[in-house]
Structure formats: C-alpha cells, structure tokens
Image (cartoon, rainbow, N blue to C red):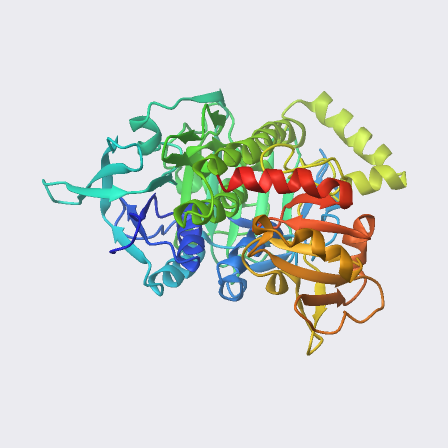
Length: 525
C-alpha cells in the first residue's frame, strides 16, 4: 500500500469494524483490519438493524445484499403483566429513511455479507487470527506504530498507520492500551439467552412480555430462527454459565416444544450500561462497544455502533485526503456521545419499566399505558416510539438554530433530471456534502461562488407536484410522492447543507451564509 499517507488500522472484525471498513474502502481509503478470532462470529448476538443502519449500509453499497438476509420487521409489541397485548411500537414511518423501521437478522449472516463486501475491495487488507499487542504514537505526532501478532507466532509485526479505529468490543485492547476508562453501571440480574431453530413463530415483530414472575423477550427471525431471553431467578444460573437444556426447555415450553438439536446458542449473561470517558486519544478513536455498552431492551447496541461508523468514516476520509484538518475529528465525540449516552440511559429505564419483577410497578405501568392509549397524543407517543431518544447533532459541525439543523434528513424517493425515474434521495445526493436549494431563485446560487464552497454538490430541489428545473449546471430533483415536501417544507426558499452522513449541518437564508462559510473554513484548516 504505497500511498501518500499510511493506511488506517481497524481493530476488530465484528459488525461495527466490518461496517466502518467497508465505508472507508468505498471512499478509497487503504486499511488493514485485524481480528483476533479465526473467522467471523458463528453466534447470533445482535439481532436487530434499524432503518438508519440500513441507510448506512446503502452508503457502503451493501444494502441490497443485507436485505436478502433480514426480516423486514414491524417494530415491537409490548405485553402487560397478564400476557395481554398493550401496544405495538412501529416508529413514525416505516420507510422514513428509505428502509423498514426495524429488521431482524442473524449476526453470522450479516458478518459474512459485510466480509464478502470488504474482500471485494482492493483497499482492504483483512487479517483474521491476528491481534493487536502494542500501540505507540510516532515521534512526529502524525500517526501510530501498531504491533500485531498472528496466532501461533512469537514475533510481532510493526505497522505504521495514520489512524486506529477501536472496534474491538467491550473488553477493548485498544482502550486498555490507551488507559481509557468507562463510566456507568454493571447490572447484576442474570438473563438466559437462547437462539433456536425450527421455531413456529412467524411474527415480523419482537415481543416483550412484561410478566413480573418471568420477564421475557422473543424475537423471531428468518427460516425458523428465534431468539428467546428470560430473566433468571436466584439460583437458576450465574453469568457465564452454560445453562442446562432442561432449564431452557422448561422456560421455552409455554411457547414451543424444543429439542437439543434446535439450540444454536444458549448462555447466561448480565449487561452493562457504560460509556467511555473519552472517544478520541490522539490518532485513536473508539467505536461501538469499545465506546459504549447498553442493555439490550431497546435493540440499539449494534445500531449505535453503526451510527458511530457513519459519523466517523467520512471524517477520516476528509482528513486522510487532506481536505480537512484533524480538528474535524473532534466533532465525532461532540456529535455522537450525547445520543449514545442518552440511549444507554433509555435502555436502562426501558428495562426497569418493561422488564420489572415488581408487581405493583407492573400494575402502575399497565394502567398508565392503557390510559395514554385512550388519547391521540398518548397513542402517538407510544406507537411511534417518541419516547426513544432522537438522534440529533446539537454540537460539532452544525450552525444555526433552524428546527431542521442537526436532524437527519429523511430519504424519500425523488425524481431526478433528465430521466425523471424515481430513486432514493441518497443516490441523488452523492457521497459527500450536498447543498440543496429548496425552491430558490437561480440568482441566489451566486452567493456560493467562492473557494470555500467549491466541490460541494449543488442541487435544486422542487417540492410538491412540480417538475424539477430543466437540467443545467446543477443537479435537479423533485418530490416523487409528497415526502420531500414533508421533510423540507420549513426550509422553503432556503439552502440546506447536508453532511455526508445525511445529518443537516445548516439551513441558510442570505444572512446565515457567512457564518456557515466560516464554519466550513474552520473544518478545512
């Protein structure tokens, strides 16, 4: 890999490491990925991908392949203390970001798809059975020297790398080598988790049974797979135990018969709710479980890690190619940590409420929920999952106080000149910054004829039932079905600057352009 800059080192070959590696390779960044295990995982750990994660995989060119292995899900159904349905949480719109809101999958299949995609890219050097054993900053402060060792070898190999991305899980070697701690709570309740085959469930949603005597989670998958999780009582098992088959069969008996051959995985575990004390240490950046761990009840552990990958990959690209200064990478923690920490807290609270073993708390929960469901606002709050922390950038590379600033731009279908064939919005935006002129006059674009805005994709956007402007020097798109107008109505007659991860950096009228221009100059220093 003879390039003007050393490659990026990705430590960890799980879903987060493979995702960020694919994103980097798609942008032409040379990388080395090391994974201590001999192959991808053969255990179904994570089981849910949300629409934002699928949108990120679309950016890596892998959405179609991943859609072949997921169940396009319809959210989560919650049950009361007696096992009766309470409500079904489906999200605000199932295809708001271009994909189903929640999707069940088997982790081994996902990792295989991600690995196949990565191996097809010449930029990637993938090394399994290889672990990181040392990490030092170089004397010039421009990169690092990483010591790696292949399984069975006594000698180490030294790699000169530009950046190290720690995707090596909760017991991160990178985090330990850099002396970075984690703050939060380790929970003591023990859960039994089992992945089974030959299951009769055909629901396309997860099920959370809030019965105090035995809180239970059931998530059906493809081809007869199903995940069961049961809260164990004292004396039924300890963390790390291999539960005996008779215990598992007894717990699963209310839902299905089970044979030993139908058990793919069964273990007992506790969970953590912790966040790393810092996410950047020089040329080292933490991602996924290395940066944050959360209870599983919101299904957001892996999805939070993929959000990290989406946020960080394009910034590494800008810095590695010297289109931006290293200070851009400081926005990673500023933009991602608040939401990740909020999701950790939310996952804890959700578990405390939905999975409570206290009968009085369960009674209050059920009464409150049924009361809320009687009113339209309460029903929307629950069924559209408005109780879940919304991903938003309130700091970092954002400018201004418009209602859309810092939010993620939805991905409706749009009509694109000259053919007017409907396509997903991201395919029209390209893979870098995009500047949308939402029904602005042609003369208004002259304000961006400066070096700072050079190279940023410029797009005229028409809302409502109108054709896009005739093809000219700028790309032109129009609303295909009313969803674009729904997303951008408050930005009419303004410019919308969209970051490569599809979060909105700024919404600008004429008076706002100088401040945003100054922010972009800061990024490129």
